[in-house]
Length: 253
Length: 320
Image (cartoon, rainbow over all chains, first blue to last red; front, side, top):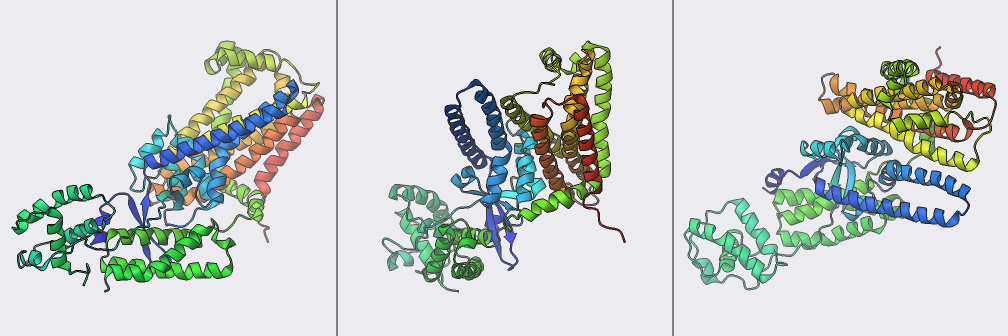
């Protein structure tokens, strides 16, 4: 049930491993990647500034000034073309910007990127950038399920969100539904499995503040109550009672 | 099927352990062997947890946590092999020239697309300054005429050499990479930049020789040109290969056809980049050095022969 619901979303892609396990990657969209690019731009600017200061401070004579201008051009070149290639291949598909935003470049098959992939996808920034500000790249991303710019398509890569979700609150009730409340419900509940899943997610979101839970419950309860023909005082208690009647106190039998 | 909360409670420690192993250091292969095999075992158990969680219909948060954990472990365990210096040697000694020969026709096209406009533009600019000004801005034209009025027989000082080497690296590699990358637009960008650069080179050469300094320019350019012009054409060849793969798909989808050519394209571009580094070294330090013209010409001839022989013969298999 969860699977078919998630397939309807457009920012996930399935990967099948040699162990015949399928898992799902969340593909990063243009905004998040743009922010990572900005962070990298700041890092690159910082490096340029730092090296510039060191070079300027250590050169006095006019002749040294001339040669330092050559060094600066080489640094500039390296920051433009080498920075992404070197870091992505050394840090397994990440740059400081991507790391800050929790992004990673992987092959479309889910494997880590190789050096050649990094060369291709980053040199092709030249085409993605056209005519200005990555317009071609954005158009390519808009036309692709996996938000790949041209460089990604040629290199066979995609950028995924690598998050570490932690909180898994257990199902629990501050005040469990009473037998009277359960008895007041009709004998047969016409609830679909996905509706029960949604209710379960709501019940597990115990990190939400009380007013926010209340607000959500007031959105969920009325249509259900209308369909099932139930009268209620407190929407939160109704939802909990419906769930316990359908699934039992532990959530699953 | 067990209760979701019981499942999470039972498996939680294993997940946290794997999470900690992955978070400990960036490189899994630098951890002690026991940790690596532990991570592999945990990865497999997380994979089965994931399938179980999906089959049992546990809620989206659990599946998402396991998805993310399995994906991270997979990325760490199946990491690309580390880089070897020998791979660079393979590229230089064999793979790059072989790949270029496989795409000989694209290389010939790229060469023609640069040389023909260059000749036309050279002839035209030699005849009339007006012609050159159709291609170059007035300012650049005057600058070029002034720069090559000096025959450089006295050489330049080292500081200027370094500055110029820096300029050539950034400028020429930029040109070459543009010739390459815009080829992904059905080859059109590569064609445009080849013709455009051909016109500019021709115009500069025509203009300078019209001003009577042609000898200075050619003496200066001949040496590094062997690497530089060839590398720009090679980069554009990679662009044309991409463009052609998008058009002649051989029954594949366009992008699959392009993907099939990707390894070749990457070799060509990396080869071109290496050649440009050599060119920048020659251009910055040898070309302006104060040697008499005959020496310069002989060295230039030797370099051209060397580049041609390298591209034509390096990495050929011995025939029985």
